[in-house]
Length: 125
Image (cartoon, rainbow, N blue to C red):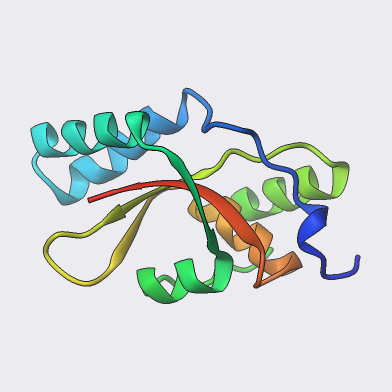
């Protein structure tokens, strides 16, 4: 498949189950009450867009290979034209790093198609 950002279709808003997933992850890093406040902030945040490569750079995350089962699942969705859920991002107040609260595997899958993909996100912090 050619590398084109138009190959990826996005939902207009994150799916409902993305917020509990973000809460679970953020509760590992922060006090649960603080994590819950950030998830509430994400739920009410406006949609924005960032390039895949910039999200990776800002987060310091490693790119997972397509052998990862979650990345494989998202790659299949992209190839079938199934819309992906936007990412949920948090600016870490303790550092200059970006936290991918939900959507890490989707980001890895999209990056495989186009590192310049303009990804819809909600961000807070």
